[in-house]
Image (cartoon, rainbow, N blue to C red; front, side):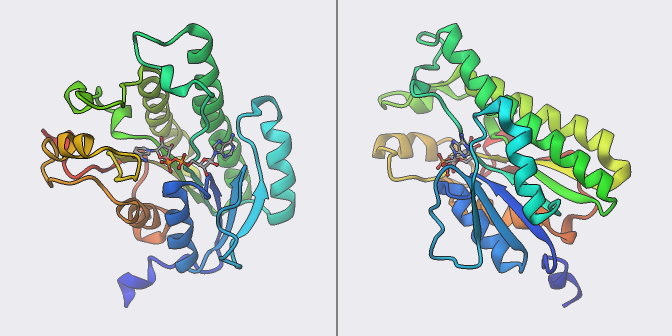
Length: 256
Ligand SMILES: NC(=O)c1ccc[n+]([C@@H]2O[C@H](COP(=O)([O-])OP(=O)(O)OC[C@H]3O[C@@H](n4cnc5c(N)ncnc54)[C@H](O)[C@@H]3O)[C@@H](O)[C@H]2O)c1
């Protein structure tokens, strides 16, 4: 039991930005099961049936109001022990971010609402954790595509396109993780990135799934539960000596 107990987050508070999302819902449930008090910060509430998960309406794309709106939540719940950002803010023309289609305005908008909001929130939370002197765990959602270039052949014959902007955003999040781990380590504030590969979703065509599976060593797309268990590990004391990592959940995608 000594080791299993380390996975419990009893008496801890967890903020999850984007907890209503495809991956976020599974993450919120995993952290709830670890006995933490969970607060979902999102623009919609998809977790109403889980009575113990609190919801706070929070729009991270309003970048100039981030600190003010986050302060309001901190006032209500105090500084969190665990902070997970798995939000996916995007502009209405997000699908136009391939090299051939993207325009400067769209590119800048997405960098602002996605990369800059992740950066600013993480910095803000880390400062609060540092001042509180109890340490903490910050988990930022990056992607395999924050580490390597996109594999063009998996898009062949599908309606999914590569995204130049996504690689800039996720690469920025992953390197900020290293910088923050270095700076906040002495305050026991741990900062890690989660880097999922493709996660199986309903919108994916048979062709895309086939293309994808053919290039992954484990031969399949990931599941949201594969991601949630990794987040649970990084959130808990079971990972107390882990900071500054890009935690890969990719079936071996980046190993070849
Ligand atoms: N799904 C994948 O295959 C995959 C793979 C690698 C990385 N990721 C990363 O994982 C994260 C989650 O992805 P997902 O597939 O669950 O996305 P999703 O779109 O299903 O969920 C994103 C969540 O963010 C919330 N959100 C959007 N705009 C917001 C805003 N302005 N303020 C607050 N919340 C906002 C949405 O309401 C939603 O609940 C993203 O950062 C994504 O880049 C996903």
